Length: 135
Image (cartoon, helix red, strand yellow):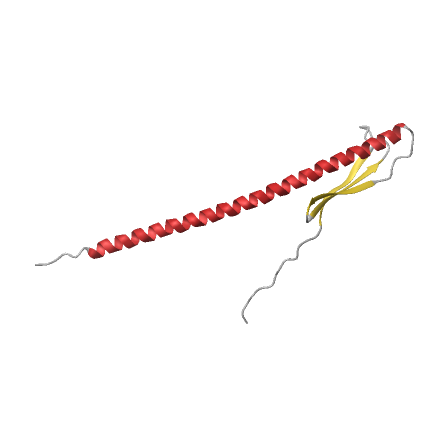
């Protein structure tokens, strides 16, 4: 009489099932952590974009005030104001620098020209390039 031992088949299928479940759980955790990191990066980008356009709006308002001053001086026949420059705060590491010049009216009737509109990096954080390597 010969006995058929099928316990090995049951054990191997159980091990395979456990391995598959653990693999799926680990991929789910990795996916969740990746989604969380993407969300944080998206929020940082959104905050930076909002700060940049807010600074641009402030600069446009400052430009409009200077342009009105130049137009009033030109209408009254006074000397045109000197070039004007100012800085708008974006965030802790960036500022918006703007320079404007007044001139005689051009063919489109403009009395001012923006000569500089650029982002300047300030307070650049130092990058730690020290590697902890055993010697």
